[in-house]
Image (cartoon, rainbow, N blue to C red):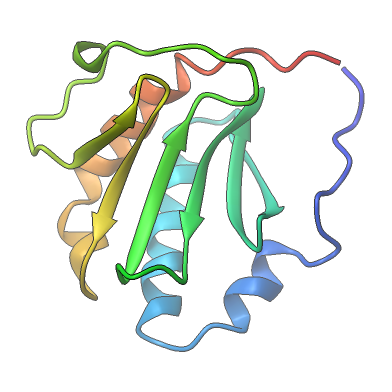
Length: 135
């Protein structure tokens, strides 16, 4: 497989270091959960936010929206769909935005750690539906 060209010269560590608390703490916690969900997950800065890939990109944090912090889950660049019942979500964390994407909203500080097990379980399931990267 060809090496992935960085989307930004800024590293995820540098991006996070430039954030203020409490957002920095929540982003660090969410990043740790995502990277710990599967050994095949990598990261880079894309769209001025931490973005995660396993084959294709599948998750991007939204740091500057109306909501404190969002995790947008998607299926990469190829048009594909995922059935809502393909992801077990007993905590009803997912807000479906379309057939190929959903988000988890964190409306205040402290919500990432409070939902850690559910978030990581969702990411583990989501990654299984991400298409392999094509060169």
